[in-house]
Length: 169
Image (cartoon, rainbow, N blue to C red; front, top):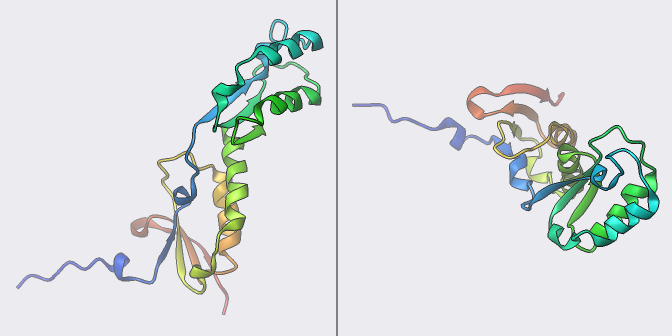
């Protein structure tokens, strides 16, 4: 008689916290301010304002947008703020920085709104190996929230988890 294979992970009280479950769907876009600078480096206010006025902002409808500058130009603070003025009616969210900064900002909004009480006094796996671009900063934010609730926290997959935290007695 053969022994039945038992999935101990499926039958355990182990809870999996997967940041991909909270990944907001939508197109991510970067806008490089240098495209509106003279030779990519010099902001001429009149030309800059005219270029923004004539840009097709509707193309960013319902997108998450990161504003950055790919050159070493010294840009006044009002320039990126003005770009945001044009983007705001269309974009879901606008941040200053790169796509990783954008993902971090999205998780900074989402993670504080979650109910972590289901993890109370339970062993938790903070799932790694994302298929989506979950930033490392999101894991840092998540562990801080989970520590208040979980009995223990591991990182990775159930078959090869790395212990991170165990609540004292």
